[in-house]
Image (cartoon, rainbow, N blue to C red):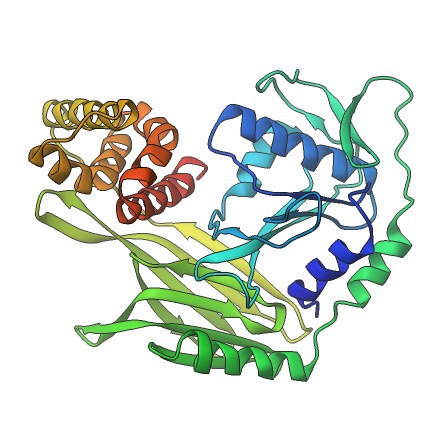
Length: 378
């Protein structure tokens, strides 16, 4: 069993970026350019390592390997994006790795890429890259190749050595449990559960009981053995259930206009633990978004966009604008779920202006975008 935090440290210590790993300050799959660059690197790493894992470490300064972290990224449908754009797509996983020195909510992203064994290429055009293009790694660069394509395996031995040095042990696991419950979440109700005598899952949050069910907010869930953060949210509510073999989370999102809000089930994730020391994750979107009168939503959509333009231009907001801005992340989310395609891009384009104006509203926008990512690629 690999401790992913140790794996990240070993990758950073091994050498500079090369044909089996890359590092990024951040990645952005919120627009076509960001998607295209991400897909290029995935394709290149898969082709350069046909028989072993490749990695992208996210949240690291390129020049000095300083670990700065990024926001928790919860997108269980990222494989769908890769499958849609890449021929002979690799198996891909994005994991959020906990580092003790990072602020709450900040993690290091670890993208693991496992090649299909066949030549990977772009399935269709995206941004400035043409469908059919094949990428390979040349040192630290992902470059297109047209002629003399030959897949070579040159990294299996060194990757196996790095992964072997990142194996977990009992001391790291115990330290992780104590740190989770006694230090990082001392103010919350915390629990742990051991599965198959090997896997330790910890979770914490503020609890409330409704009709004999317990719901958690301010939720943090971690697989301690691998130092992987499975779920993190400061807003949504989560129901947690488990058996001897399966740990299940059901996430709820609060939606509505004005004061008429209620919780809707969004996604159910099952983590299944096996006797052979492995586990699998299965996510199912169970979301049925509320539908509203389209004429009313047009008015809300246009009002929101006017407020965002005011923020961009530095125009003072009225009291009514300030009230609408507070609800803007939720109402723009509802607009998108009711067919207003431009609502998501507006949140992406203007969120930094909102951050300069009000950090709390900015955090709510990030939560809305997290929900939209899940819905969009389902």
